[in-house]
Image 1 (cartoon, rainbow, N blue to C red):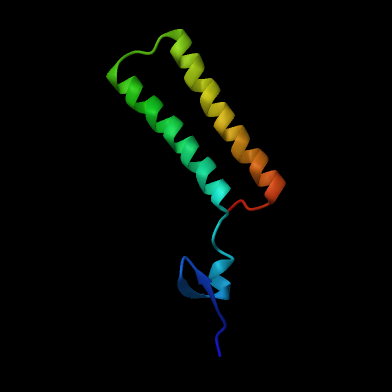
Image 2: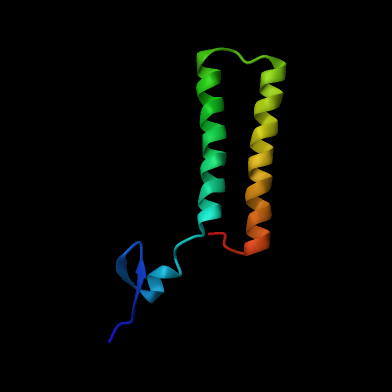
Length: 78
């Protein structure tokens, strides 16, 4: 008999549960995607000033660093 676990009120095989990533990693990935997407949209609208470009780069580096730190700390990278 296949053992089932419950996730989000839905039964699921135990093996699939291990594939799910942690919620904090999902949030950090989303933050990185949001920074990159916002930057792309801004550069399509107009040329960024040197200060705006530096701020966008800083935010992207920060998001990447937080994600890398999380992966090292929790070992939940994909």
